[in-house]
Amino acid sequence: MLLVVLGISTPAFAEQTDVRDPAEEDSSEESPRDPSGTDMAAFPGIDYPSLQTLDLGRTLYLDHTYEQSNDLSTFAWVRGHGSNDRVALGGTLRMGGLHLAAELPLQYTRLHIDTLQGQPTAEQDREKVSFSLGDIILGVTYLWQLRSQGTTFHGGFDLRTRLPTHTTKYTFLLASGYGYEFGFPYYLHVAPGLVLALSSRYLSITINQAVLGMLARDVSVSGIQQKVPNIFFWESHYAVAVVPTEWLALSLELVSCIQLNRVDDAGFTTLHNVKALDLNPAVTVSFERYRLALVIRMGLTRGSQDFGAITFSGTHAALVRLSYVF
Image (cartoon, rainbow, N blue to C red; front, side):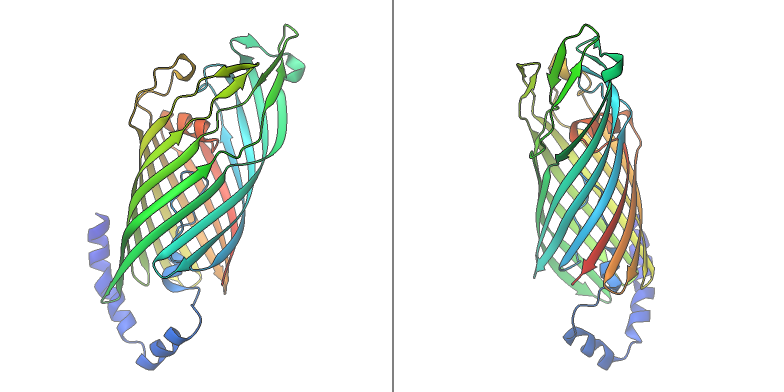
């Protein structure tokens, strides 16, 4: 259906771009990259997993994300809920067909824990807050492009990684008076994939298919090493962006993560056949070389809750990002 929409709309867009003065087009090619047009259709991703930002050349951005998980029982030893304020400094760099991206987050986390290993926590010690370094995100994409009648086709490979640099551990006092120390399991994320993108002056469609490997680091639960299993997902992104004016872009991304392996571990009883489906609408406003983006993530399935817990990105989230395009 997306390809049919693009096929219908492309000739109309091409006619509009064809009436431009040739001399005007030549001068635009020699001038610095205009931070409008197709660039405005680059989807602003929200935490992980997010579609890697493409076609923005060189950028720096600062963003804030609020994330919420209403149920942490994906980890069998925990009953409770939590929220997270995540501030990240990031950037993108494009050199020909090579696209690089990096992001460094800091996090302020609030936890409410009712029970640990089935034992109730002390009423006065159920709320905890922590400030920590989050997981560093790195990405690389190589794209080939083909232009035809006002439409640009991109195709290539990408690799997204998330390094387990998270630094948080927690100690809760149980109702019995015993101090219980634990850390959530932090994974190394490795996601090699394929990218297909089609864009015109007013419309952009991006499809990304990847295999996400979440490679485990064991955690200490009250001084005892807890074995954490590796988990693998088939990850799909479908993003559409419409650019009605030079200063406004409206985007919609559908993300699905389908578990490929079965986890036979009593500590991860819900990680069987996880199917996470998220819908991420976004709006981006351009002020010359500045971009202001707002993205919301809405988890649509029970699997979204489980996936949001193990990736520490929450079931629901909202992001505000300010970018500068060089």
